[in-house]
Length: 372
Image 1 (cartoon, rainbow, N blue to C red):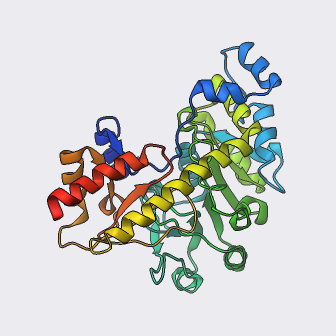
Image 2 (cartoon, one colour; image 1 turned 90 degrees about the horizontal axis):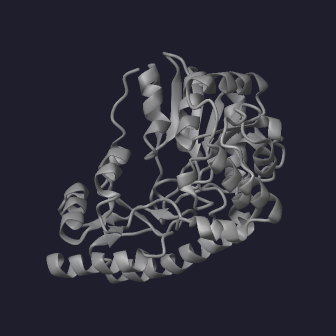
């Protein structure tokens, strides 16, 4: 398989562990092992101390799948396949798509959500958001992109990187469009649960549509990216069986310690999500004041959900050079739009880390010294 380099991941590889101030991370403040073990119930602590470090069940630990199922309405443990989150994208695309198929995807977006389709030999249409009084995806624009060859609709809400989302009515209408045209939906739901109001939270597409397949995991909402635990959910039995067999050629099974730690976190999910939302809300208020102060330099629309935002640089300097100069001069890492193959002069900020105010202060020092 020939596939283009993953621009976002290559950019992170260069700066993520060398820049002292990460202002572009999309995950929440990572939990420490000590913090997670302190949250664990006695039963999961017993699993941890008595853990055998052998192979695990390929679909995932039965108790883990039981806890995951509680995040859904109509998904049973037998309709859950654990995997590394990126592996889930890879498996789904290779088992749904074939050369000559057409997909429609939310864009800008995580590169694998469309790049794998290109590598398979598919054509890709990009459903891009409008930006009038905030980022929003219009279903009328989506309808215009669908053709008779459309096999798959790829969506990501809350959206990376704009922070846009859909209303519940819009999601229902989107599923109606897919049903009418006999289209699969791949729904990247990695930021599910990070809506600012509980009433905003969307149902999983896999709960609502038999030909929907949803991706979720521990990386973002549960602040445990290092576990490398995610999962796919679908009620399409044929597709599920195909995915389970395909996994024999990727990871085969998950890490035994990671599975138990994920069980602990899922049993403490209310506490973890409340903690993450608290950090996000505090930082979002700080960001609002920052962008109001520097409104001559940036155009900023407050995100509607999730831990990231996508402001636009108003200066004549392009965003890639701006981000490069900032990280070299002040050690502050932003993510330029070019890593998304997006043509706007935008950059990504993440605001779910506790050190965001310190990183933002360094960013402000840069603005004062370089821009007057």
